[in-house]
Image (cartoon, rainbow, N blue to C red; front, top):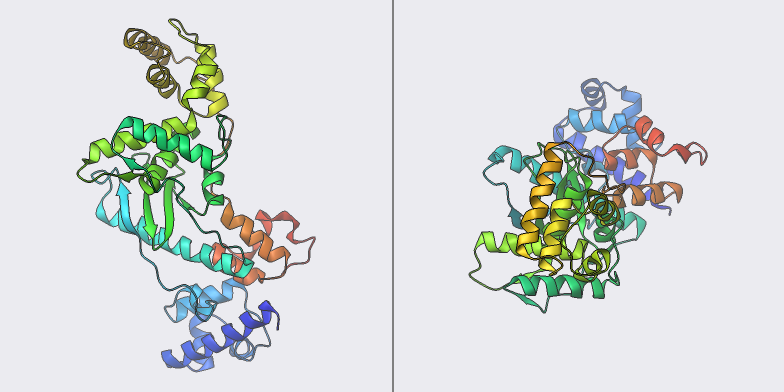
Length: 363
């Protein structure tokens, strides 16, 4: 039996169960959902597959989640987020944070379901779990070891989010005010990072994402205060994005002067902010504290003059969900209706998003 037939059986049996539990006749459910009695009958007999719009209408009519109709037997149970690291607690009202958490869990469960359909599940393994972190040197060592374990060398990381998704970390994108940077959490054994797509500066997203990775993989000693942990995660993120060895190569030894063009080139190459680049030069002993102060003054002056600081050309957006969805559609593992429910967009929009679906006659 094909996967599509399994889902057809699952849908019709769940529809019958839900309708009977709600106490509706076919006619009553059809009236409430804005569908004909004949359509309800065809759905329940497996003669007709419902469109995504019909699924949404039926779910709303019986006060159910759309996912109710498609979840596999033995599917992943409800999950919750734990060990949440959130820096902006005071800036986010409780209700907003609860909404973000709920949306994040919903996204994770939909991606888990897609992974099952695609038979493509990734398992995260922390390659630096044996390191104990208590100082800046420890955080730098952890970043170097992670680069080594993940075979990153000392070159730039082209796409941070893509790297983490391919390592089994779920990355979810929300859109909130720029006061909210993001957070890290665990959904059982699944590591989760939430980022804010309202942040327009890509270098900031890259740094924040790896900062949150620090919260997931660094094993801090007990009794470290929150501020120290945040600083160590910053150190970890900075060393991952612009490792000491690369700093030395880029600056070519001890320096006292710097041009805005040099800083722009480094920013555009490594996807690292100019202020962070200057700090990296100090930490790597390329400059002393006096030169650091001079460079910072220059940077502030350039900023006030609205000088061009260059722009990192890369993009940082989660892609794994869409890749899995596209694969499942092209391989015939999933119907367009089921895909649109999982993606939470209607079938027309889904076809627009994946232009080649028409060519493959997917409907």
